[in-house]
Length: 577
Image (cartoon, rainbow, N blue to C red; front, top):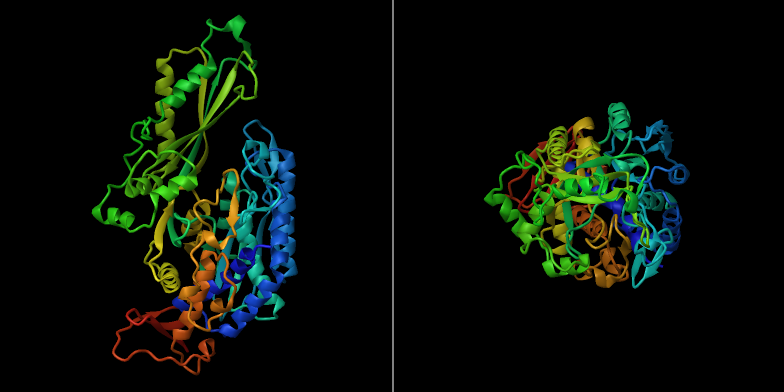
């Protein structure tokens, strides 16, 4: 059975140690390398159990996109299973009732509860909050899956299943990390909180209301928030994500009547709704991907030479990227153009038509009512409400020129803002240093062309630092057919040649390591380099000293005095009296 998931779980908590060490946030005893070795041994012995649990989670069809009672029941079952698992670990768990979701047709469905869980409340420790979601995109084997999407299946060193990488795998990995420490009867070195929802793929219905309500309670003691819900830009090089695009999802309905027509009886004498809709959708974007809605680019910030240089520094093998995407040709030929149109420019995608005949065979029907669905990925400084007005105005103008007797209605079903962080914040510098230590190279500092609305929500409502640490490779297929987690070592860089002799990682079998295991190795190195005041138990056992004459930057936080020495990479902390 694949060892990746288990080792990924063990690495997650260690990453928190590195980040909190960088921030000097807590002064409780840190786990020595011997403990980390014990954790790894425990994970190796129990990896089959972890993968079996992932298989059970993948088997639950927790589709939040299709608003039907059967899937909603599955969502409730999924959330109950996760809550039960956290409770068995000793967490204080609240499954918060979120009420009803009102659907456009007037019907309503219950919203799955949001899990708020807490492990530890020691005021001398730092507190980390992990966000994840357990709902998934729709999946059907007939849509092109090689295997049953709800049966976790290993094929050629890859584990296939809906939710394996987005986002059941990462959520389960976090829980498994805690379970390893619990099983070894070791005190958690940090307080940990979980906020887990079941409606992320449908726009995180009701989540913002809960975050606002809990900002001075559940989130009050949180130092920073970690999200692992995206991918690297390459198959091999690690990355840190500091921005995501937003999303405005539109529906445009064209209606003649509720019933369909026979094309032999009515063809040629009607303004056909489908013809109107095709014209409307065709007016939105040209063949080069340029959005044709007037004013849509007005708020996009001008491109600078400095920004262009950041794209040049990104590792992206265009041939590999094209092959892994299984497309013949992209719209653009250079790495810089590709990245800019994925991250810093808006894009418009047409997703489908509701009410049209799409079954096999020949049916001579004229749909009486059709709904076109499309979305615009927004970039920083674009405003959701402004985009809504621009799109509506454009479609109304195009429709009026057709002189159609049909009725058109435009609605925005979803409006999510873009998010961007400061890559000079401490947690990003810490993660960057860790990756540099492990890989001997700078990580790709990337944005994500998709939308992770909770990042913006945390930033604006609870005012907490957010860091996105991707777990998977670019070809993991989130939202697509054949979603998977890599399990073959050939898929990844083998990091063992970079491990210090005698480190826990160097003693482990060669296998496929996710990004956070590599950060774990950097944790060990960082701890080994830390200077310690013997009166401070947090770093007891490490006796390296700062290099004389190397200038240090002094930072004072609520609980500690932190000296950062950038030239040496060493840090020194002293608990404030």
